Image 1: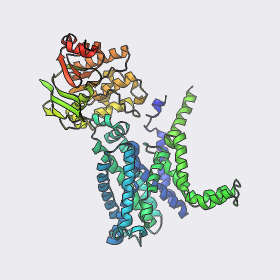
Image 2 (image 1 turned 135 degrees about the vertical axis):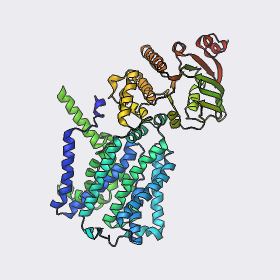
Image 3 (image 1 turned 90 degrees about the vertical axis):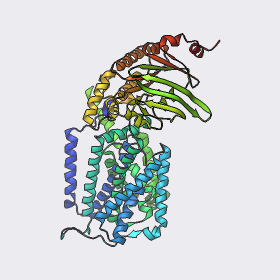
Image 4 (image 1 turned 30 degrees about the vertical axis):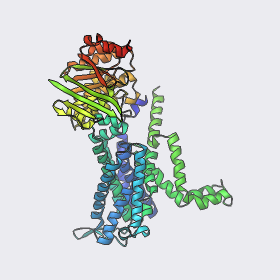
Length: 358
Length: 237
């Protein structure tokens, strides 16, 4: 009875307890972990989850597959950092300015692109994001073009005269990322259990049927987009502040848009924890690829000789080939786990329960 | 009192007239049968009435509102709902969630929507399918789901596009009963149907379309004895 399985979205006690335990562990983690590299990976995972959850509201729940979310990521990052660097507006205001600008831009793009359906919408979303990238490359007065913007320093965050943090270590970013991630999870959960969530899913399943049931398609698609843009833009701003450098080829790249979508597809589209799982798998994997860890491991295992042609390829080229490997991974996931890792696990668990019931 | 007035409605696709100069009225509480051979323009007329196409000419009045140029969602909010010839279940949502989407047209509370949805599910008799995915239902139950979903939007006027298409005689009988039950709830209905026996049984009045034009209008007895109608269906001699 596959039928029942999909509807068991109601939470039982064990997963709730596990989630609470995981959250507490995450809050305590920086007290125990000394390694800045581990914190770095965690921050990247958090940002990836936030982006994934943001995309998921529009793509997963509402069925509008945007492959141009880098535009909102980039707009958020650029707004915050330009305001901070050239206008000396503190980032904790700038971040919200970034959100506002990104949402306004999103609504303009949305009111145009949402006239298109299916693959045409996907293509339009890619084209729009590319327009932003090229614009950022050429608007040198504002964005410093291809050279990008290097952050000199972030002003310390004060409440009254007490300095809460001076952003000198990774820890504040860790907590900022974690809190926004939790907010994103909460918002998604609220949406899923609200009229909006029902309307979003109705639009995903059949736009014409949804329209005839009194759902104003333009309005609700734009509402979904706005939620989506808020989180994507926040992730962009924090990324920019954290890394300390932005340029069009990192924060406005097509690569990034694809990566956001991949996180969701691999984890499981249209679920709360899909993007979480997707990010937990993808981010360490891509870091391992880039830092040549995987290539070294393969060579060390003795499977491939370092001096052979293939060994040379692994060592010299694999780190540049992450996009290729993403592609292969995506094909494998779509072939064998069309509902993502989460859907795959749910299916396995229900199959096991069925066996036990017999 | 006329709940729906169709006044000289025409719809052109390029040079092709899918509807030309169609006029009729519907009285509150009645069942109007809409029949005609394939390509007669029945579904086009439905689409014009429910806001999917703006009529090229003419005027549609529903409950005193001029409908021309309204979008389908606004039409639904005014109290006119339709089903589709090809069923459109929200496949990956459960039966109750499907009906709740309809009910949410009138309320913002999920709780109220769920209560309303369960009520409509009982009207159509899908009580033991509540948690099933809509996509897993067989065609007969999908048609019922479709009816439950539009009922949940609390329509004054319901437009049913071939709800019996593709059903076996037993299932058709259930739908006929359902349509009569809905009439007893006080909801006005316009029904497109190819099954002549069924349409004669349920309709208070029938409009016959042929090649986009209104060929005849009358009660079922008048229609079966109308020579022009018989010619259109059986071919002229």
